[in-house]
Image (tube, rainbow, N blue to C red):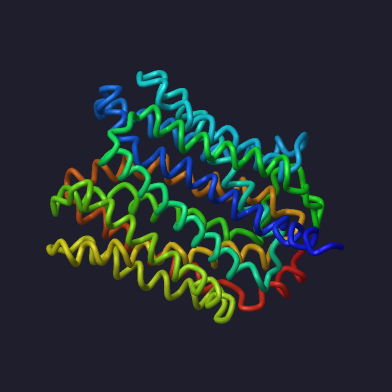
Length: 392
């Protein structure tokens, strides 16, 4: 093998494929999200009812993520990931051409199908391609890559609209077009990596995965409270501007670039139960802090700490990797994603009504969910591989 061939092969690895796939996802989805509120109001004249309908439509493909396993009957997982990225990229690229209610509903559903199917298959491929020893650190590195890509997206949008008065249609086209170009490069020049274990092509639910399902559901519920209500509190209670919130996002991603790989490596050393115990105790304190905070700077600090804890969610994925039959990973990636999104359908609407009565109760409920997670995490087996062998 020549030096040039060796150098080329070093770049054609499963990890590089996942890195570039993560960049594609972040370029398209983060750009779509960052411009969404302004685009819907300024270009499409949306009110609260239309944006609520759009967000509900966006979550439906996530709830239906388990259907990915049926599509794997006719397409290999790596190819499915690329098809999903194409749908995501195209959906974002054409968003600016349809500044109407039904046009935005249609492009949102197209984008969301690609996004949620990719996230499902991406989790499955990561757990199949990484060994159990390297998975925590490499998953942390992928979070770091996403954060770096998000910073580029936010920087581009800030420059485009602050200095160049760019039209929404052009911004969406640039981000979606670049994401599509990288996806096509992956399709044409990356090898098709062999499956280490042939995956089941049907829905698999096993009793021994019950704890994983429970932790996944509770994680989805807590995340909805953070995504929907924590940022809303920063604006409503403390008067944070768009620039202030953008700075919080950028600071969160800067910290993730440095901390996520270290958190992943630390989980590999201390194990999933200890890592999740620390995360859930921390989240109990953070959500209780949200409920009681009266100072804008303390509120921002809680928001940043909350985001850092997201990286520790790696431990739930690596716990499943250790207890799972390798043939079940693809099937359960879809199942777990659907379980995670049950909360996305329920939490925003029901807790929105609670918010009208008393916002603090929403965050105390989040602390309660974290406490339930803490209790459940104590049943994580410190030697899950032995347990999996004994009950399989």
